[in-house]
Amino acid sequence: MEIFLGLVIILALAAALFLRRTGRAEQAQTGVPIDARVVYSDTGAWQRVEKPLFSRRYRLTGKPDYIVQDETDAMIPIEVKPNRTAPQPRHSDTLQLMAYGILVEEKFGARLEYGLLKYRDQVFEITFTEELRAELFKVLEEMRAARHADNVPRSHDDPLKCKYCGYREECEERLA
Ligand code: SF4
Image (cartoon, rainbow, N blue to C red):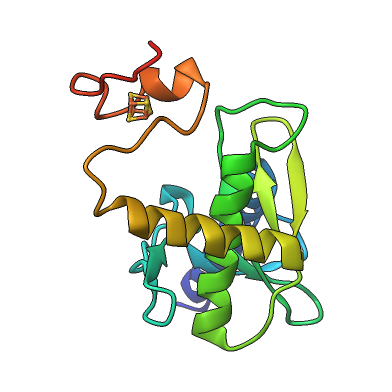
């Protein structure tokens, strides 16, 4: 009986070690800093899918892929674009991350300094400057105003965006 119990304990320890190592390997693949604690996850790798964050004040909702806390307990939203490669972050991705930053601030009541944007081969640190915040609020205002407009002109010159857009069949301004 003692031998059996010893075997069970050894197996349990081995399983715990394996799970810990697997978790760290997954964390490394996403580009999430290893010493950061993942507190929120929207990917299969981390299993639990949380509800979208919502800000009544800004009438904004969305789900970052992760929220982690660094060693100073600061919250860091992370957006992962696993298929994207670019020498610099796309501006639309930067604004999306800023929006998540605002949502995390609203939820946890603390001002955020920056977020991380993970492309296939790189991780960009995006500082949440006053200019970026102001630009996001301006874009949100414009979007709200556009909702009541009969027609809204295309706001970009990116054929790729149109190629994967769900409205491309009906859109007269599509580029691809
Ligand atoms: S197809 Fe039209 S709505 Fe879609 S991204 Fe292109 S311009 Fe915008």
